[in-house]
Image (cartoon, rainbow, N blue to C red; front, side, top):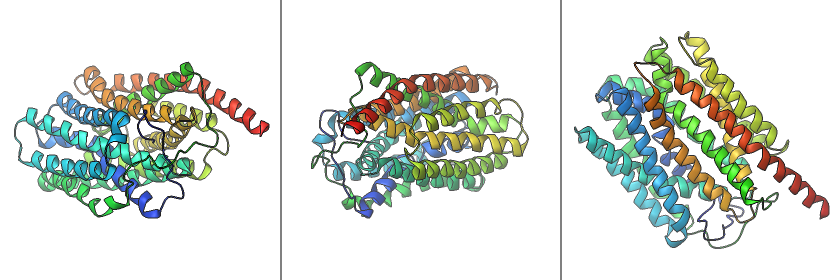
Length: 395
């Protein structure tokens, strides 16, 4: 990602390995709840007495907290010391997660989840910003997503055992301690992003209508992801699988997601972006057709793994595309906000259409949004490709 829309993005050129490590760790911490959201939602229902709808709203309100600070950082990150913001955000996440252990009132719990999301949002904004300002953002975004998914795979696998051991307490204590691990690396983060301008090699200034079409593609895609991800665990359980079978399937799917992100990191834009985006978005939509109804363990694991593979192959290409749609990095800044808004809307939208354990409407809405996203992203991607090729031939 890049920094504020009101200031020129900076280059983290030949980034020091510890800086990239710090940015990836901070990003993983910012996503620590979202990436295990299916298990977290299940824990709210199973251990804390939330009904399915309220659990969905809890997931949504946390992402709204993330969205709020992501939007604030978009416009005001250039006014703050990034290291100070990072420390404050890590401590906010630790304090709010620990407070949730002792809270009985569900409304207070929701307020704390919003505050935790607010801390997470600035970490995601800054972490993704630093990665996006490296010389090879497509590759480094792929690495970032790989590490996030590895964390998610391990977390989802052990969540049922954690619930059986001590309900949500053990999970919340872990979520308290994880942010504290980044404190020793805060010094490796840049203090700000004002040192130098950086422009992607293939970036062109697309017309504003095409830029907004791309942003609507980002919004549609992540509303769909927010819809599905929050309820995948409950979809599996409602489909006849045990909690451990669903957890194991989601763990395998996270590893498949690692493979998708790794493929994007290795291939990069070697074959352009419209082809992998088409395969990834439409492949994800196809996978959701087979996640409706009742399941056997193996087919559920296969299709949820394919879904996660396509999602995490697509994500780096979406981010790389957004970075190429203007020469000042402003589109990718707005794309971060669209991504978080979509992830916030998704769980609440899903909660509004489910009834008595019936989740098929969630799948169908997500499929429609994936197709809309594909139709929205093609015109800007193809226009950028033509203009970049024309510029390269003139040099």
